[in-house]
Image 1 (cartoon, rainbow, N blue to C red):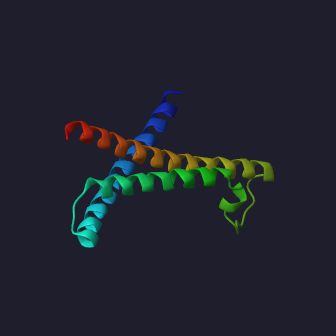
Image 2: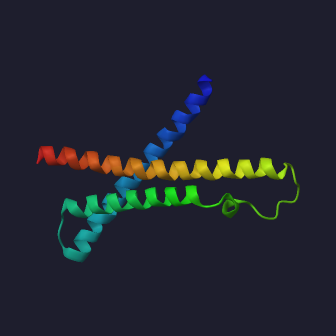
Image 3: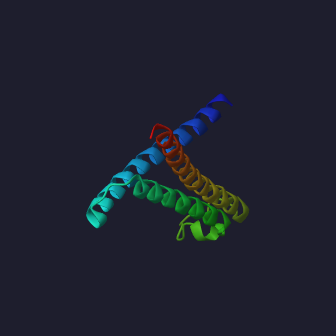
Length: 124
């Protein structure tokens, strides 16, 4: 039981670290965009881009949860190992796991950007 929680914590810690890295990458791209397109540096480009990426990932996670699991099945499997019910259940669980990871990635990006924006508003 203890190792199950550790695995879950490891997965969500990896998702959190990926969201921090993607927040930084989007921030750098936003700064470059601001300098190239408008010859101006404002924090608004950074926050708007990160919120947009977070919202897009949240929507993608929700859409994947509602898509049928047949969309995500591997076709052309040579050997039938499971019955149809077991394979369907396993495909549904894999799809929902991927959707949850994408959903949490979007939520973490949204929260990190929001917290940074709140901290900067207090400082400035």
